[in-house]
Image 1 (cartoon, rainbow, N blue to C red):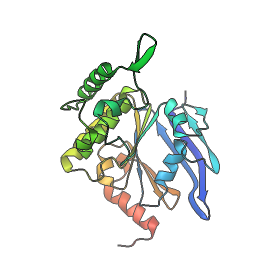
Image 2 (image 1 turned 90 degrees about the horizontal axis):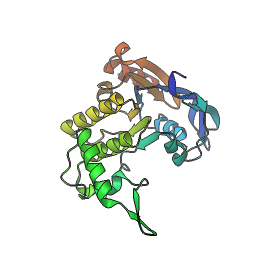
Image 3 (image 1 turned 60 degrees about the horizontal axis):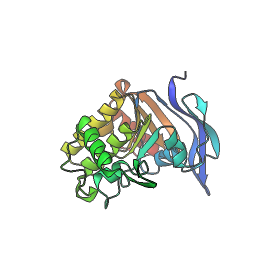
Length: 250
């Protein structure tokens, strides 16, 4: 068995004349939280979109659980246990909580020859799972639009845990959250790790990811400029490394 859940080797990607990734190596171990850091345009989003099958690499190889994989769409990666929670697209605002929880995985029951949604069962499961991971909702019928940003992230994370994600990718999960909501989301991330899930935490806020990460990977201008165990660097050192690579002087 490979020690890595995910391994990306020599990933290159260009968009026209812009080389977004220049031979990046990236890996995530089992039950590990990796902070993926870098300024805007560093290549973080492109790397992750290649991992989940949204983009195809120009060069490079991807391995999942020790086997080489070719994801042609996000659905391909989702089928093997990779769940991605995007900052603004985690949930559908106009749908209730229970509907979002089972979106694309609805429970069906038969009434004679007719198949219908088992709404009662989905509401019951949604409420129980959210409570189990420490998320208390007023009602599963509540429209997502009325949830806070932290509550939305929490529901999306709980959904991934329930459906057996092996790798959870979080894109700026704490952006625009209050201090209290940020704390709760970080707790949910640690809970996912306790349940055996690996996590990629994409952010440009070193102080948020530093609290929960095991390892920090730094990108700048399409290149990996650092790969550190958290215990080996301080947040200030990480910011200095990124700033130096970007050509920013104090």
